[in-house]
Image 1 (tube, helix red, strand yellow):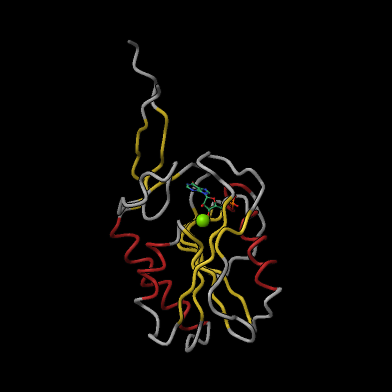
Image 2 (tube, helix red, strand yellow; image 1 turned 120 degrees about the vertical axis):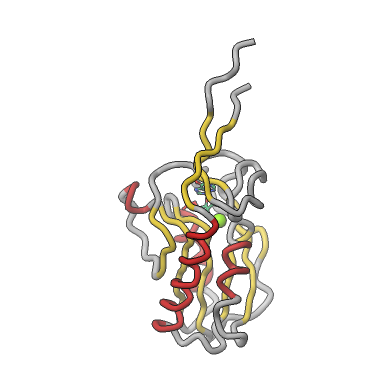
Length: 180
Ligand code: IMP
Ligand code: MG
């Protein structure tokens, strides 16, 4: 069995600073009073927790769970809604909070799905994006870090449900299997 190796990419201090900056960018660009933050489970958990504490307390929080990865490192292209919203977003201003945009398939489906609920406006903040590295063209309003096209874990991001609790973000590599 191949051993997994973690190569540090973004430290917890860099994350903390960037989240503060993102909150300032969002506050300056969006009417944040009564904004609904929609965290896409499970990867956005840590980011949403940190970001929401930098935004006005009148912001509401809800979650949507979608699945596309199912423990693999590449997208299956099939997006399922596994948990719907609890609150109505009709006529409301919404901020989707995502962990990472890779192919953009998940986000495209989420935007389509939410548009059927007739929100007043929908914006997107993603902690990480591989869009530039991959040449993917999706509309993201706020991005924490543009990263290379590598599989990353930590700060909510998992591989087969592991590594989410790591405070730093690292590249997950397969090291050469030990000969035995
Ligand atoms: P997309 O649909 O290809 O944009 O993928 C979006 C979802 O795939 C993200 O919300 C993550 O849950 C997962 N994902 C994409 N890239 C990574 C990664 O590098 N590490 C962990 N999860 C990832
Ligand atoms: Mg996600």
